[in-house]
Length: 244
Image 1 (cartoon, one colour):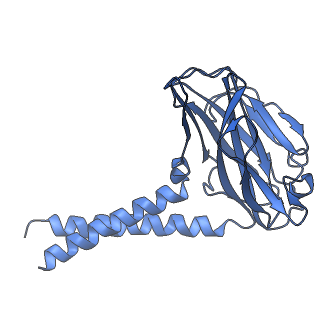
Image 2: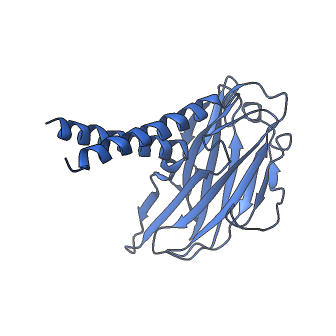
């Protein structure tokens, strides 16, 4: 009976540790709902965008003023219609702003925007990405290619991915240099992927991350909890499986 209890505690601790560390590493950012639509011809339009935090050694969406926040954006054509063109837009709402959505004419899916006291989709509700030193490179973050400043209009940055065939994907790496005087708090980081699917129609999918500006103690504590729980789980499991 005691051995079974040890095994149960060990397995539970291992699972908790794995989930905690995976969450802290941003693994669950990949769990998104894509935009799907069926055309009159029976073909599927599938648009999916996902983001993942790659900043090290602080993998959560948290960064101190004066530090660099790095994340990756993946655009995938999940349908069976080739895209004529595609691009992503990146915007960061001001501290405390809300996130909402709206429809646009000839667009399948909802465009995600920020909203504050000035109303929805207002420049006053967005941080100036030029001041935040936004850069991107047209390759995964782990690969080496040139950092470039994206086009910025009304504080919204745009990066063109171009044509993407059905089943294929494109990945870009982004970074922000958080100004030293940035106020601590939560800022919505919004990524919209827009695909030109032909016939004057477009499809959009969005991803929203919460960018927390301030001390990064929380994620370090979470890492410690994950590591300790994994260690305890391994110990209890080993004891339970040890022959008498």
